[in-house]
Image 1 (cartoon, rainbow, N blue to C red):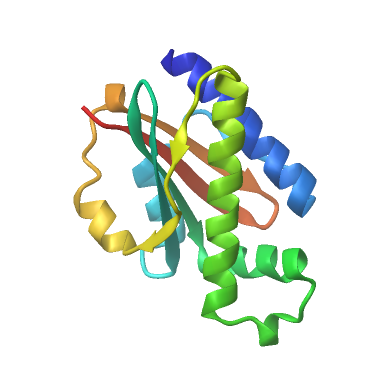
Image 2 (tube, helix red, strand yellow):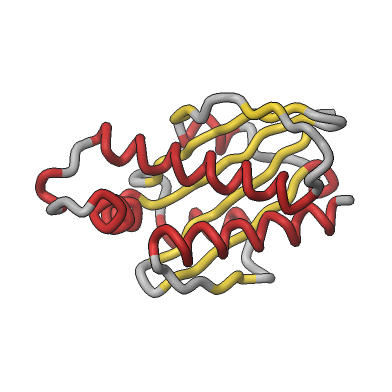
Length: 158
């Protein structure tokens, strides 16, 4: 199940970013969560969390550097970067998280019903303090684009 879900998640990430943001992507198969934070720094990362429930439950976490999110938001909303405010950034990261989660579960199993919560912005540092997840309880993808990298985690509840 875990590998099938990871494949569905990667396909969804690719679909959302290629279709909505015209961003070609690569997946770093060997990159870790720690590698991501070492490369981009902890201070300017926005994190969005979306809870889900079905036969299993957990949450999606999207971690994206603010400068990359600014570029995405500028293209997505079609406005000048100097006009973009925190609400625009928060709205964009929430929409990305929602699209990836919904598409992932649709790709994973069209017959199952998944209840998705509302995406919310969380404190990245708070999540880092609780990120010592066991590998068998999460799926992680480090994603690279020409504009930067971001990370997505899917954590399962016990």
